[in-house]
Length: 492
Image (cartoon, rainbow, N blue to C red; front, side, top):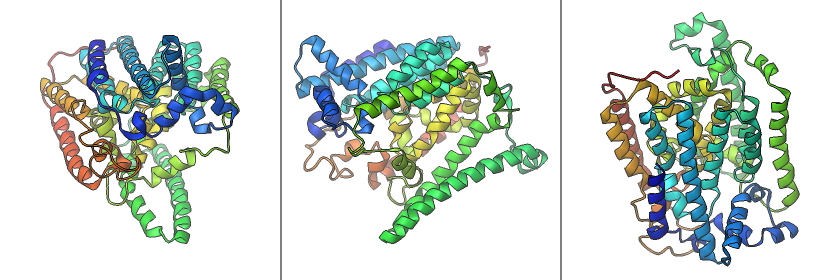
């Protein structure tokens, strides 16, 4: 596995392409490169926003690499250092994945499916090397570390990684707090609670019926408040029809996510006294979780200037969940964009969602909380946003397929789809980029890159890729139903 990651990474270093935007830095990368060169002066002069103050660690690592090696801070050296940092993150991530698989006794099939889902997708083999001056590679490593330390039950190291990771990826503090609180937390039989499958089953269980009604009422209320607030503003601007069209386009995907959340956390809510178990959490874990949340917030507030505009924020992202940046008529874009970025494992997770949810509940409430907190972000359609939950989802999928066993047909099909979707073999810079870096993103040649990202995917790319992804999902479903191996190994 390490050899595969190294071969792909070194090949990209020697022969790979670099995004033309920003002189090779990309869009956000211009700021990260600036932080490498003069982070101290940015802080002292009040030029650092709250958003970027929570992503300073990779730039500090790159600066240290350049200083130790004696290299100057040229554009090429900064880009190359980020490439090497991303490659190191992938290698360390592969090692951590193997350790997690060994810890949970995952067999060879699940081990390799998990490895391919994490390190042989478009994100790892193309995105990180084509657009290297980002924090994404280090963020993947941080989230793998958090999950591994949770499984190893190492609270102090988990706390340290939470603090450090909060300066790589904004949600790391939340993820670390969830894992720390639930480190030794178990809900008895939560993974075995069966959700009713028919209307008559619901009627026979009044408690479950009340729970789902309350859950749906909360979801509908939250969505309605966001819709009414946006539409009232849009009416004054004369854009209500446009906003409503965007909402209706995203509504089917939104309903799927609400249902998926219920399947994931419904059995937890239906378990006996789900909140009472927190009384068994040691006080030191609450203190570590609180400190893991507060310390990075205090530090980022101290080094940032609140008057500097942020390129993103909580309210902005929440609106995009309800009103995605995919225009009108591009239905199912969240799932299409996620599949393009993360590979066929996304389709498998969706096809086996109930089983994946069950396995995650067995692993612990921390991973369940991470997935539940992150899952709505898939609706934004920029699928990098679910990076924090991806290791948890892959772990759940690997456990499911390892337990069930897979056929040779499935293995061959998954391997072929993985190679095709990774697109490390595809050339993006087939023609010079002209004009402003922010212009004509849905047009050739910039669309060669942006057709992989929902907010900027043009109609031709959408109309071609959606049927292919739906066909891939159907083929995987058929392959999973093929004859399984006659002998399987049972895990404890």
